[in-house]
Length: 340
Image 1: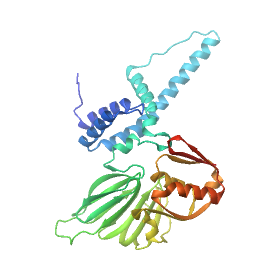
Image 2: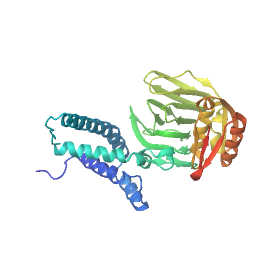
Image 3: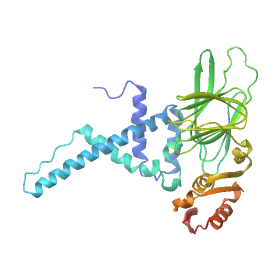
């Protein structure tokens, strides 16, 4: 009998499962968190493994649990009418699977924290990440820098296209400004910098551009200077300075002209909104402000906002918006603000 897997990926998957169960309560001590980070750093494929396991295992486990619940309910019904009650035995593998599904369900607080008041486990396994209100700049290649906005997750990429290798990033969530100013390419040098976000792919050799990926899967690409080649299963095009493109997995919207300085205002500590729904403004505030602002009025959330404010004074912006739109403010402990 084999006591271990010959496939290293199987070992990583098993370890990922153990970590998910171990961290299921969401009450992680600093030592446990550091150990988890060390394990992630030692396993380059960890991020993908954890995401794949959660995406594939939990729904299947839930279905198994539902089947078991239905079987138990049927047995209880037979017992109620005087029929013999049969208690089917669960196979060991099936029992273990359901047990892990229950543990995975219990780990929901760790993977999807309420109000996003603390980092999700999937945030911790990204190659680079920023927290609420945090900005970070990283050098990802010769002549290429990436400025990460708040609540942003990025994985590093290295892909090849023909004879020219590309370096790049996969924007998992959040927003980043990429500045590509590489030296003149030599034979065997890199062929540009790639940014992947959802099903879209951007390639730039000399450009400054901003990419934002929201929780709804929508991606916004803004070319600040230079040019950016864009590829999607539905189209290919090139963005020039002051042009913006919005897309998701299914649709690529027409290119529009924007003020790029307003788009990257976060780089100078400002948030600028021009005709943006209030709900979207609240989402942006939550990326930079500790605690959480909760909007409980859907009609209010659809109202258009034109405003700008320093990131350091977002509470003043909340007060201004509530006065301008007649919203009632309820302040709760932990920096939670409810607008109704």
